Image (tube, rainbow, N blue to C red):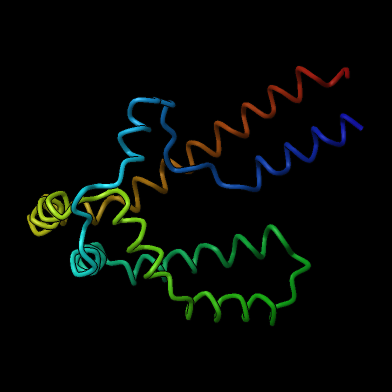
Length: 159
């Protein structure tokens, strides 16, 4: 039974992409981040940040990446089910959730400074390269996860 569990873990590690970024747990930082700002970012500021960062394009790119992944992870999934999923996701209104999340973490002052930065050449460059940086980090994380799982499986083969 343990061998089956290890094989399932190995398969999951190899099939699921690694998180783009991992940070160490820092209780002080977590407490600071948990406190909502006194003057949360406005809905208009969230919309401006979404526009400046190309949210709609990012949403489309995410769907284009998700579909092949789902096909690979669930090859038994009928095409019409996948099409239905894509259609529903394209129509999904994530904006209220996005606004709420931004408001929980950013103040109007933070937003004003971030928006000002995004409007600069350096800010635009940052926005342009973030998807590639995230992709590279995910690939490195996935490889590390696969290598680590292979080592763990090798170490526990005899069990």
